[in-house]
Image 1: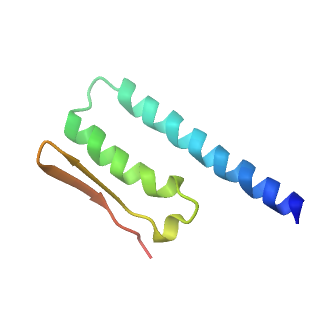
Image 2: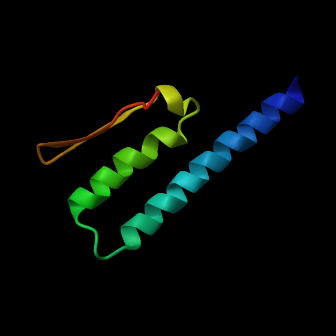
Length: 72
């Protein structure tokens, strides 16, 4: 039981670090507008959750909403 739990914990932390890495690469792209960044973040975030198939993201920034709903 512990081995499975520890392995799952490592998988989740790895997903979180991958999310941060992908987000930081996106921010370094000088050609991206704030709209590109918000859309990218809303598309990136659901995959970083433990159950991405039931996750969605909604970012509200300066009166605009950037949404990404589950795909299944």
